[in-house]
Image 1: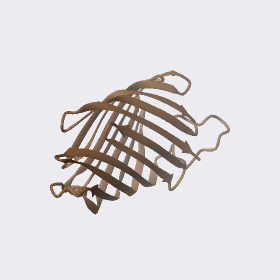
Image 2: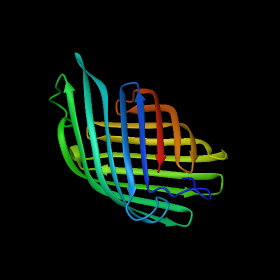
Image 3: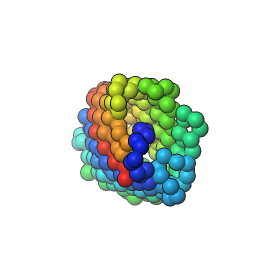
Image 4: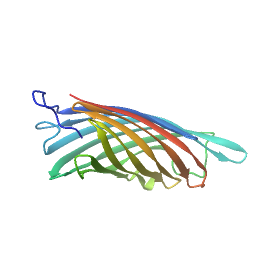
Length: 218
């Protein structure tokens, strides 16, 4: 978060896009959030749409299963400021579709599903230089699908932050955990961030990961 300077208009929409990669997974995604009654920085109702596509692979003797998944969310939410803490809560409908080549009869994460989804996002400005963020999401898809990410950042100069992050995501057939570092540059109408680190999944196979994201407000 980064306040607008004097004379700048206050944006009420933000669009973003990004990509993530690990040794056995990749994904690209984009989304838009719009404040319904006023600027993004003010308390109030929001609507959000998200979509993306990705691929993954896993061994299953004597072959390697390759999966491809599309996903989308349509959510309504509310933002509220509590002093140095900003909270955002969203709820709505989630969609996912997974295709496996060759087909794996032992997995439940295949085909198309729709279901409810909830999202909670928090930002705490600890001081003019230090901040914490937490993003949580859960949906009913494939019995239970979740994601979480926590970041601790320090702003070195106007807009440039660096810090550490922890993340986890999964469903009944997969769990992944990440730990790494990030760089983030923010200005009044957007931000760009990148992160790298170590990733481990349910099979305890260790590898690396990288992410790149950009967000613009208007």
